[in-house]
Image 1 (cartoon, rainbow, N blue to C red):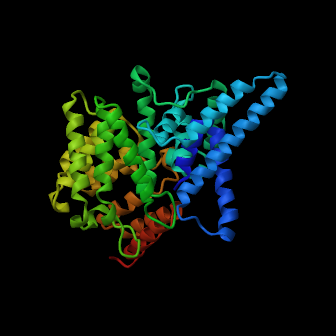
Image 2 (spheres, one colour; image 1 turned 30 degrees about the vertical axis):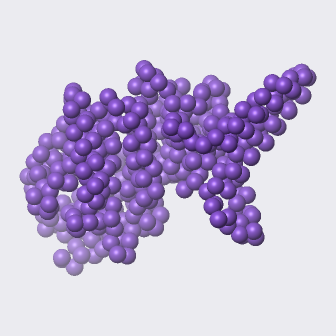
Length: 407
């Protein structure tokens, strides 16, 4: 939970995200070695930050010493000034720019290709493993690993400044930053692996960063659209998990447990996005879809025809196989399961969805509604075999068992 903050603080000092990650990892290893014997500090987060800062200053001192030896120059005054500056940076409190936000914009610098920007930021900010990032991108794990290594090297060689861009530079880099934040949120909202259905701290971090971005770029409708989307989705968090940690699907949720404060914030952010004018972008359209659910007091009151129309618009703005899969669900709810299944069946041959567990999960649901239970059972079983989340696997196997019993 503290890793991203530590990396960001150290990166501000050493100006190298690769080195910052290494120093942060060293700090965490030291904690694992010392705390079992000496006890956990009263404030573990503060201990980790202080230890990481000391390591950063030591690293800078060693680097300057080697530099002086190699150049055989007596630049003691300049070296001491740089060390003093780093110490001051290490002692400084977080300023309004926010170190984590600087870290995102550094990782999303135009010197990197877009896929590398997203992969690196997910690694540094969200602490996601390479395989988790690969699943988010629907690409092979070695590809993601190579992107991350090359991205760190490129940033170091280009001496990319550790800062939040301003003016035109901010607008140019905003799109990839929004994508990163939403992928971090999604990993928290529906964890790709592990024993938990959700990772709430990732949702909270993405929301916090989204809100900061909204203050930095108040005239950007897509920023408000993303914030609206995350606020409304986050409002369902308590209702998405049952008493034993099991997943609760949208139509089965107790809507009294939805957070009305977050819904209000989300609807207000969506209103700001719409008031700024122009065609709605991918995040604002998804927020409008989420708003349809938020405004419905019961599942039966959901305006599925409007949701289907919004998915039609989203497919034009941001076409992808996953959007088509979700559009198929909306069409099924608005016009019947047979209409939805026709769209979903067309995605079976899509290479990027070959190992995507939600494709057979959706097909299983639609087949079950059509009374084709044997086929639905097979689809749910396949979905269970593809997911790496234990809670989701259990859910899919339970649905397969109900189909097998004819329920």
